[in-house]
Length: 365
Ligand SMILES: Cc1ncc(COP(=O)(O)O)c(C=O)c1O
Image (spheres, protein in one colour):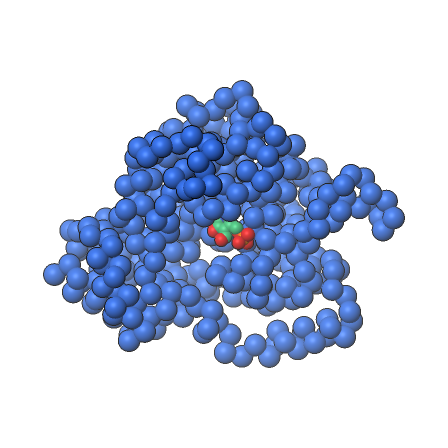
């Protein structure tokens, strides 16, 4: 049996509704900004429970423009998790700031207990990453943010709909950053991103930053970027956003089934499922003995397992200039050698899930 990791192929058996709206857009020729994008910004920020959404070119740009809007630049330090997708560190580095990594906890997210030791006079923001759809320890992180008057920019690119005690991730920080890349649950058939915020000031800056600093067609307040979320992509987003609860719930249900089965296997460590933390399982990640052998075995059986991520950020070649060495972040490094992600997407059939469970059991038998 083949069990794919991505749900893209199955995602829309019938894309005609979306295509008919795209046809209307093509006829109107209204390809930049406009009502369709505003609608998506309203729809999306309503899901995250923030006042505003600003559509941008990608999740990476959502992070970059958030930092620039906060005035971050050369010489500043930004604290983030040592395990994330490269874009988190990339966004920091490409605005001229220095990524300062902090080790992760047993949920694979920023260890709030270690943040304070990393704060210096140059720290200008903290970027917790809700990795794999699991919320970072936001209540503690927000207390630290207040105590030290350091803003939080949430990297929620993998965590649409995740919550801490009923509050959506992305709504804790001064901004929350989301990605609509094709591998994300709400995707826009291409690249796209959104910054959400409840700060009118941040919204105002972001609207200018994404559109050349233009306050009108002929007046430029400051030189900036072209990072608008394309109207065509917003059309797709407006359709898919309607399915967000169904997508999240299906993934949570799949994860629950895996948890129930894998908790019986001693060689598997399931991360703690913290009370009040709604994990939306962008990836279903567990730690296992003999990870590389299991990965190979599952691939041979047609199961598209993956590792998120095998090389932590501080050990990437791109981070050499930061001077980190192996051993700096023991939890991150241990996890990198033991974690495995199993297919958890919303279109898995009962048969496929059963097959994954049986094959994992077979390996550890
Ligand atoms: C944690 C994290 N941060 C940032 C990004 C960047 O998003 P995008 O690919 O839309 O630029 C991603 C996307 O993969 C991500 O997973």
